Image (cartoon, rainbow over all chains, first blue to last red; front, side, top):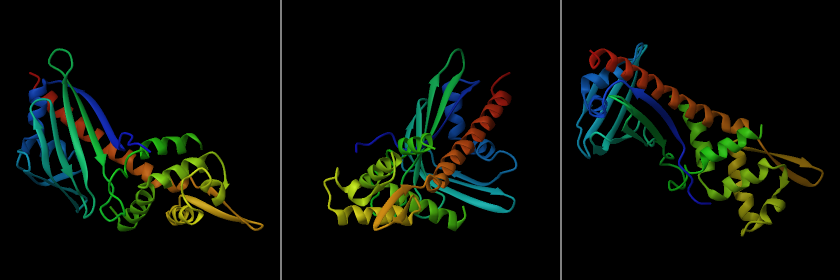
Length: 143
Length: 111
């Protein structure tokens, strides 16, 4: 079986600002603290080093339960594309890629693509996640 | 995330991480089959297929029924539900963040 697109959560939004402004919000600690942790979630710590290999760390707290998300920057191509790894538990690794496209006067089409990779402890961690979306779709269509 | 749920997801995705097992699931989604039926079109021994079947079975993705002297396998769509819900939750997570960013930009960027 060849590799199909990996399973991912994809979200698209048209935002009321040019690409540069939207891009910069993603590498600004204050902005991240606000929009990554919408009420009732609170940002209890945001530490980022926006350079390739730099750290991405957000601690979100909701009802006294803290979740730490950590990763590192994989790609910084202002104002087109930004990518960082995303892990919330040992053995869980995934990648978040955000693309910014001009969309009419002063607007940006932002696409967030969160790609899940298989846990490290499984027998194979290559190509494993591929085709699952397709498979899921097929299984659900058959119900 | 709760450890138990995480373990369920690990098992599901581990089971799905192999192309042969995905092919077996797709074959079973077309109808119940015996291991020998599944093994025939694959370049693999009965024992090899049987091992993959055991992995799918322990992940709760398929069920085995003994009818007479034959073992029949069928798909359990419920087994994929947790994995599917997880993906939907991730999309909801990012959707909320995108809305919050839109609200911030409305406030800070637009005059």
